[in-house]
Length: 171
Image 1: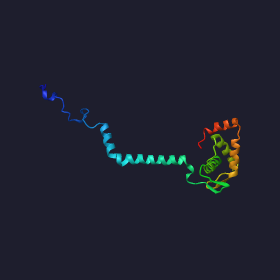
Image 2: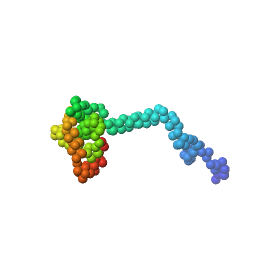
Image 3: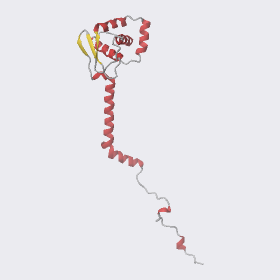
Image 4: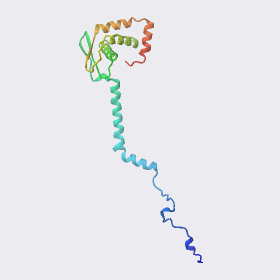
């Protein structure tokens, strides 16, 4: 039998990789993220955020004023010409023509329900053929004035119905 040797019974010195996990102190996630933001903020984050903000502003301006690229013309005082834009319907063309007339004649005071009624009257005067982008629709000033006088003579109950529908319209 062999003799007892105490040096063989001592624990290993953790020199072996399979002896268990080794925990070392180092920077945590917060410090690592902070360093990453400091290094990349001016190079990547700021330009991307700026581009998104500029795109949102341009989109908002276009959304609020879609007809800004083509201006309606007034050939003479008897006609209002309205160019057809992409996405325009007969109602939108009539709405733009009425807005152009009201800019030329700001003394008209109309409720939103009356404006909606006038749009409908003008819409029915546009030909039934499909609208083509770039074409021009002309409205007679006398037709617009006639529609305005009809709108001002609406019965209160009829006007109340038009006002209900006008709540959902952005003039």
